[in-house]
Structures are given as structure tokens and as C-alpha cells.
Length: 376
Image (cartoon, rainbow, N blue to C red; front, side, top):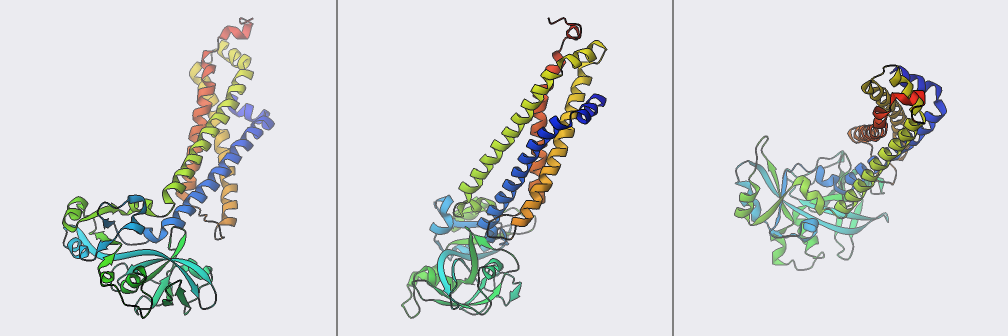
């Protein structure tokens, strides 16, 4: 410990440059973490905020596009309501539409069709809840995009007019599009392509995207048995995120970038301490000749690496959080999460320490005779 602190004190420039590199990697990790959390929130926050534990889709539906392809008969809702462990089951509809408000705001919306008296009906932060057939509750982020309570929006190509009656208290988005909750019957007409005044297809009132299921607190629902009874195919809520447009590709790309960054940080720190170990070979040999054990030398070197990594990562993460705070709330999908930032910082320290440990392990093999010129 004494040697580690002494070297840190007298080689400030050398360790400062190394700390700067690690700090910059920490900044990048925090920014990537914020972007990853922001993209997830922008892609599936509308699903995350639904009080459901699983969705029952059409049997055999393609899982990565279940929300756009699944068509379930509404009778499946009754089959799910009677299942053991199920607290509530309700019809759920999902479709994407292009709309334009009466004040000229063009906005794409993910229409969630829900029964106004069901557990899926959203709470509001302002305005009123779902009720009338033409009423719509939009995500709070839709207000940021230009919509206002009381606006009338028109669905493109159909001409269906909807009135904005309320807004949710927080962000609700699906596939990077703002969510708008509409009564299930209205959603079925839009999904069937029925314009106002057009004859309504008979099948329209029987079709939904999925059955939203909520389990009783602490209960476990046998999804396979429920699917067999209702002729559906269930996905747990988190598994259903993969059916959101672009979700799987975005998250796996960012995770791959983070893995590369972790590997690069371990290599950078390991290379630095490898060079450092070679340069101090003679000094370490002297300590070995004076009786210092190999374990003491390794602990001293790893303590030095740990102090450098913790200080550099803490400063870099702090800078990253500051920069992220400036970005949060803008047009970029970015959100800081304390657990994600902490995990990224801890991972950077641990992998950097692993790289340093691999590099300084050679200290243990230094022959004390080197101090007396025995290697010449």
C-alpha cells in the first residue's frame, strides 16, 4: 500500500493520462447506458405501464411481430377469465395510424384499444378518462409534440375524427410512437378500415389483437393450460417487448457495443499496467531481495490499479451524468437510470481490475537476483 500510494503521488502525469483514458471510457459508458435505457423506454414504455402480466396472442403467430399480426377472437377473453390464478382478463387492440390534428399537427399514434371500464383503462395526469366513443387519451409526450386537450385529430385515409380528452401522467410510447388509448369499439372500426358512414364488417366486433391477462398477487398462471383452453399463444409481458418494432435489433446492437467497450477498457488498463510492470522491474526485484513476499507485491499493485480505476471512473461517470442531464428531455431518446449507471461503472472497474491483474501477475515471477544484476 505504501509503494502504491508513493508511486501515485510521484508519477502524477503518467497516472493522470491513464486516468483520463479510463475516465473518457466511463463517460462513453454512461452515455451508452442512457441511450440504451432511453431507447427501451421509447420503444416499450406503453407496454411497461400496462398492469398486465402476460398477453395471449393468436396461436402460431410470429413472436417478433405479434402485435401487428395477431388476430384473436374476443371470446378468448372469457376463456382466460376463468383460469386459476387469473385476477382479470380484458380485450386489447394495437395498431399504428397516421393522424393530423385540427391545428395542423401531423403525428403518428399507436392506438391501444381498451374497454373503458376495464383494468387497462389508463389513468390521466390532466383532462378526463376514457368514456365517449370518440374520446382518446394520449401519452404526455404527445402534448410535447404539439397536441392539446380538446384538439380533434383525424385518422388518415379513413377520416375518423377523435377528440383528445386526456393525457397520461407519464410517457407511454410503443415502437417510438406516442400511444393513444381509444375505446375498444372505436379501435375495431379503425382496424377494420371502416370510415364514418361505411358499412361495418361483421367480423370487426369479434377481433382483437390479444387478451391482456393480470395474475393474482403472488399467484402463478399456467399459461400453457390457458392457451390450450383459449386456443391462444401466450407471452409474458417482458417477452412481449420483442414484438415491438425494432426493439430486439436496437437493444442487441447497444448491448454488443457495451460489451466491446468493456473489453477495450480491460485491454487498455491491462496494457498500461503491463508497461508499468516492465518499467519497475528493477525496483520490484530490490523489494523482493529485501524480503517482500510475492503476495504483498501483487496486493500493492492491485491496490494501485483499484485506486486509479475508482477515481477515474467516478470522475468520468460524474461528467457523463452531467452531460446526460443536458440531453434528457430533448428529442433524443435518452434516460439516465441510477441502477444502469452504477452497473456500468462497477463493470468498468471490475474488468479494468481484471486486465490490470493479468498484467501485474508477472511481478510475482521476478527473481530477486535481478536486483544484483543477475539477469545480465
